[in-house]
Amino acid sequence: MKKKFLLYLTDEEVTLYKGANEKLYTCKENLKDAQQQLQNVLSNSPKVSLRLLIDRNHQSIQEEKLPFLLPWDRMRFLSHKKAEWQTQGGYVGFHFFKQKREAYFRWVHVSQKDSLISWLSWVKSLPNPSGGIFFVPLEAGIFLKKTLSVSNNYQMILYPLSSAGMRHVIFKGNRLLLSRLSQGEEDLKSSLHFLSRTYPDIHESLDVLSLIKETPSFLPHVKILSDPQALLSFLSAQKRPSLSFSQSSSSSLLRLRVAAGVALLSMLFLTGYNVYQGLDYKRKVLTLSPEIGFLKDRVRYLNSLLKNTNVPTLRTASEHYHYLRARPLNPIEAFEKLSFLLKKQEIHLENLRWLHGQKLEIMMSLVMEDKIGEPLATHFERFLLACKDLFPKSQIHVIKGPFNSSIREIFKTPSPTSLPLAQIKIIFP
View 1 (cartoon, one colour):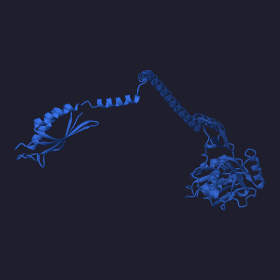
View 2 (spheres, one colour; view 1 turned 120 degrees about the vertical axis):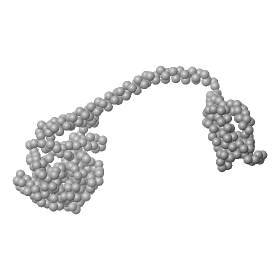
View 3 (cartoon, one colour; view 1 turned 90 degrees about the vertical axis):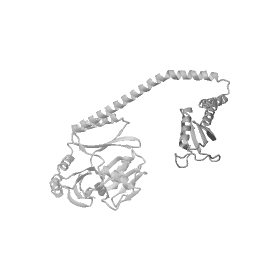
View 4 (cartoon, one colour; view 1 turned 45 degrees about the vertical axis):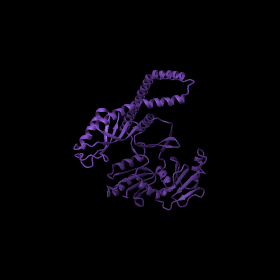
């Protein structure tokens, strides 16, 4: 992984790292003069990105519980918030999140009067690519989840904060409950006592992750990490911050209003389409209502006719009736035509099968009388043409012809025993 510059900014000092373990510069006195010295160090590597890590005592990270809001109401809420921030100028970062089916809005606003503005403007003026702005207490919550696993319990992290002591940050799920600088056990006890007024079960359900070897003994369920730089390594590896920080301006507010307008127009279009669809359904119902009334009257009439009637027997008779109606061809008539045809063409019927399924089919095997000198094909073709004349709408398929090897075969000598055999199928419409 390519190393980044990490500029760790607290109330007491500023420290520059390259990666998580290589400390390049530390300043604890005049932080304004530190910018020039830092710029000299950074100018040697202008292509290395710079990530700003903010870990101040009085940084206002605020959360607000929201009622259920429709998308356009949420856009309007955000528009009012941005208008409020715009009056104070500066930079702002925000996001929405959910916990136990409840919505929350978290934001950080650095006004134009905040001393942090000079650092944000300075970082922006550098040629080094921006690596993002990270608020360490917020990112510590993500580090807790990855180290202790996701939990709905209360979770606390203890980590060293340069020479100022240590910081303890307490979460419940995604919510940031408290972030304080502490000097010892009494500060920790005071914080937990303060939170227990709102969260009485915090003492029994608190999981602790410590980057400090000497952890207060009164804390239960403590997991100690041997590497004190583990949080810094995690911050270096993070792809993006929890809050995307940007300058509060009228242009961003205008973009928000345009987005809200587009969302509103989309909702109006969908509402109009649903109204049109509802009116179309109503029209179809009104069209079908008379027909439904007629069918109901018909059902009542048929019920009166079938009263005291053996319905299963009637249904069986109806099925037989419709079966016979679907087969109107008279087999006697078809046999008479076939008898006349066979007699006229001097062809003898060997066997016949009458198949009456979806369509009527007749399968016939025939033997042909021998006429010396006449081609078999001519005799057989004359028979097929006669069949077509008798049954003009039918399909005639030759299954087997009266030839052995050639259509030019002829009768050579009369044979009373072995006559040419043919087989055809007639399919009636």
